[in-house]
Amino acid sequence: MKGSKKAQGDQLTATIIAAHGRHYLADADGEKLQCVTRGKKTNVAVGDVVHLARTSNDQAVIETIAERSTLLYRSDQYKSKLLAANISRLFIVVATEPSFADDLVSRALVAAEAAGIEAHIILNKVDVEEPLARARERAGLYGALGYPVHELSARACPEQAVETLIPLLSGQSSIFIGQSGMGKSSLINLLVPDADIAVREISEALDTGKHTTTFTRLYWLPGGSSGRASIIDSPGFQEFGLYHLTEGMLERAFVEFKPYLGGCKYYNCRHLAEPQCAVLAAVEEGRIAKMRHALYGQLLHESAQTLY
Image (cartoon, rainbow, N blue to C red):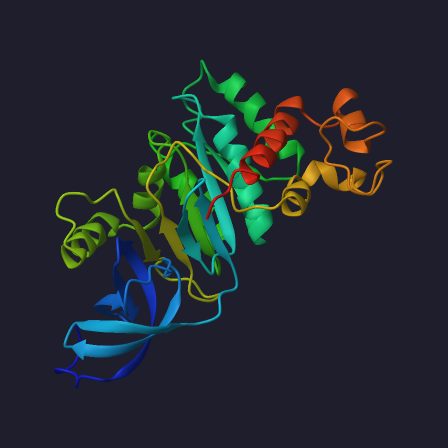
């Protein structure tokens, strides 16, 4: 911490760099402050710019949240989970091994589209040759939809991995997501040399003990001339619920549907079983992947179950 002891009641603007339960860590120009919200509110996300009232030398209360440019979150039938705020790019980390879940990748892409966030795919561990062709084929489905796919190997070719990613991260506020085992942490450690130290400090500040992988955290990228760049690392997860998306949001979040929207016989077509549906015709003709259309149907079903 820099400077002398600050007076209580100081008004500060800061960025939330970690969250665990209702406890947050904020960065105010390099000074780290432990924060809580007033009452039982938990509507703060990592990446949020907040206005704080200092309550002690290293603690503060979050008074207000500045307007967000974007908000990424997932949800199930009963509640939603904020992942990150004010991010401009989403990187989904997949690998040649272990095998990745197409359902999770597609759900993350849909969430990014709905939130107005640019999405990229990182195919890691391309040095593992036996499963490479199949992994490329599967990742190629998303490349064909217009999502950039970046091949690299954090372990075998670390310098090349950094050279690939740094230009993509420069000047951006990014988030890395993916299942456990895909090499996401290895990539973060390459890009942020002090990441392990930072995690220990954050864990101590949030009093999370040894549970250093259970919280989302933001790192500032070193250097950079085109604005301050950051990476948000999220815990690995196996599910990505999108119960909060409405029917209208869902059909627009599948980028391959866009050429056909408005071309159906019925203006309120749901693109499931209706006659003369332009989307269904495209599925039958192979212009829309059946796997993606099946997920669309599943997401519509989930949207109808929402209770919160």
